Image (cartoon, rainbow, N blue to C red; front, top):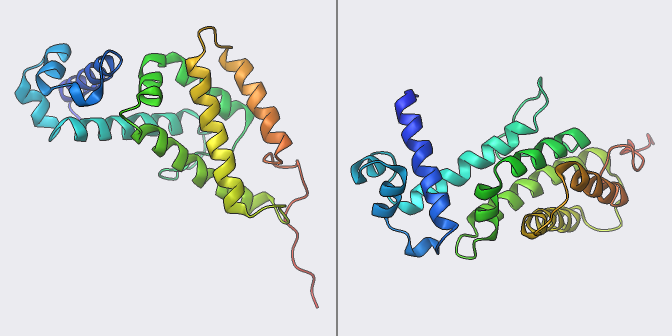
Length: 200
């Protein structure tokens, strides 16, 4: 991608997020976005069909960045799926969230824009499903119930973390969440690995 195009797109996305921190998404106009990004109205429409398309692509871009931030160096990225949980990958996610606090807190806490929270939760569900299939055999509840429960809980913790006036550090919240995952037997080795069926 041309560097100037990327610079314009980044400026437009940042303008949208800064405006969302100030007012409801539905009340934001393309003219306001263009003015805040210091580009003309035509430049915005050259990249996005409307503000809803801009928001959608903004969410996709940031979710991809979150996934990439917690990938091991030699890992393979699966579209729309978080990598298997590890303490370091969770820490990297929270560090990225912390570094881009305005952006992520705005998307997570904006009542008029549930898209980001839903996409993040769907991504978590897919990742947890994979881990449950890999490391668990006899769960006390259905795998899908467990996946939905844990994904909702994790996203809820992230949202709560953002709303605290004096929130703990990325390292501290990582340790707390890691302990919860261990308690819910979501860490490889926390319970016996899936056993092969006996040969009859």
